[in-house]
Length: 346
Ligand code: C5P
Image (cartoon, rainbow, N blue to C red; front, top):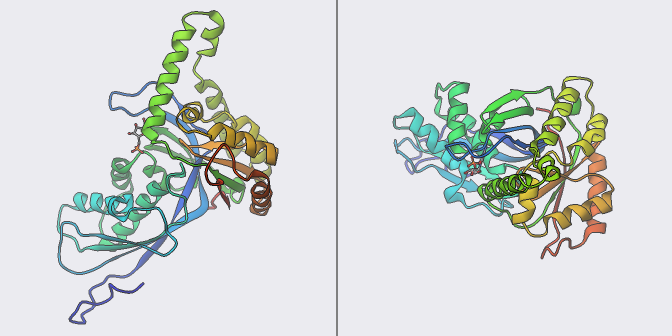
């Protein structure tokens, strides 16, 4: 990195450079437990997993002049699609600055973006979590893990998960309850990511989900059959979460996780709503499943699906098969973006 090394007088003005990865995440399961809370958020329960696919972040203090703000973010080459002005990593630095409540040197952040933007892989949230950790070190702040997690939650519901000690966790509340799960058994499980086009806003998908639940309730009031159908869709996703947690806490392996994939197929409660607000999503899933003959699972609010394999090599082979077999899917203008990666080891 160049450009911030010395002041015009030649005096070193920069602190040491701190570097860390900011991994992507998938939701192996995601249950929406009820209607919006008074604060507008929904209570969730789901198993989140970090991936080897990651952005790279560096942070150092730059300049001694105490400023309230003026932190800078530079995107490294190949990092398309991020507006540096409103990036969540910069907002994270700002939030920590406010927490400190005293003048701190300007921060220079640099990022190489590898996680697709607006894909439901929580890249921005992960960047923010990593920026919090790195900024804490660069500024030498004595902020504890609990306080850091509280600051993280002000940046977004997905951010606290990335501060957790395990790459796999059972997440609850609106995202702030992060219970680590054993991850060693399934680290290295191959993951093929398939990102469709068009990111609906997460808020929009939750609103569509609420509307869907209300619609089912109304229908449910009319017939007994429909009343059964109106039972919380959550039930199947919760059962899948139970099975997954039992596997992770038992004799887990990549092969066993792959075996469980069919049970995770309908374990994201946001999927039906996401298909309503994201054109081409259901068609993309169908095509992926036709070509690969495996379940395509849905991450977050979309538009990314993931397919599990016993190894990263098999995920890479599947990527080639899918690229050849998929072409243009679901009327999308561009073919879906494909990335082969794995469940993270730490
Ligand atoms: O927390 P975050 O900014 O990522 O959330 C984006 C939007 O997603 C929220 O404004 C809210 O509408 C919705 N959301 C929710 N319940 C959650 C997380 C997010 O309703 N647990």
